[in-house]
Length: 405
Ligand SMILES: Cc1ncc(COP(=O)(O)O)c(C=O)c1O
Image 1 (cartoon, rainbow, N blue to C red):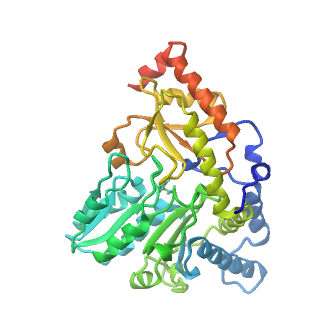
Image 2 (cartoon, helix red, strand yellow):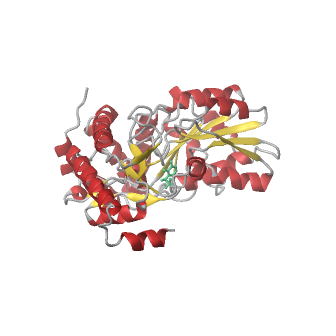
Image 3 (cartoon, rainbow, N blue to C red):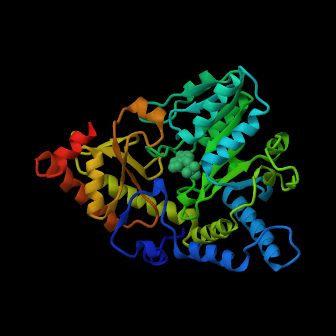
């Protein structure tokens, strides 16, 4: 199996050249220098638009084709089933509205308590506009999806089952094939938010039976660009929101509004090349598991972990807090010591936040460019800060706690 050469990986990132430790991957990853070089190259060599009879335009045409081909390889589909857009959220609002041209009052949509709001709000808005019903599928106490609850909520009126492949809050993975199968048995579409799965695991949309799947390249060391797969026959059945002269082929293109960010497509191709060059997801997964095990083994005893206890069934995203210690204070203190870790309440996972009730928590999100030494230093800093606060040795603590209530 391919082994990740962590020193070689890190040498490709100027951003990792100082001592700052990025443990914030679910919010967005650092990018290797070759991504910005690819972006600059497009600006230098192919700044123009499609459809002109000279070199710049031809280069853009081949770049778009390359981006579709490479993304199809990344997702396991045909190149023309790819739709590029500004980000996952914008694509999801647009495409759910497009599908909704075929929905009517009384139709039902399932979303889950594991979802990021970008895969919930579009359906709630549509429900308001069209008189649809949105049902929320529950989770078990360990944050795994409750498939029995899902099964029980499916009816003959269910049109879409929207779910995340991995949760951005607690990292829990959903059995995507099983949910797709349940959705299809009920005659519904399987609509997958893969934003947090894509940086950690290989994907095959055809094998799992996805109808629609969305992800975002800035979560896997690429540019700020949204990506969508739509099953060809489904896309062909939709009426796109488009300027009339826009070509209808390839089928994904009819859903891409306006001129695409070609420099970002260049960067996207470079990000797939980067992932392949470091050993692909075999290497990424193996290294991230080692990092996650190290983190879990060294978390201070005072830390409370939400969700699954071990590394199985999850991506390496961990939600934690220390009872009695404001996580916003921890986050600021950690930042001061050179550790980038977020503190937030819901992390936009409103359903899970309501269900589990963690208040505000730290999210420790690992990426393949982290090192074991970084994890050890982080655990040590966290232990010192928590102990310091609990022993009353934190000068800023009282003020932070007061501001927090
Ligand atoms: C699981 C999940 N879905 C959707 C989104 C929204 O993605 P974007 O920023 O591309 O709109 C995020 C962003 O963090 C996310 O974590």
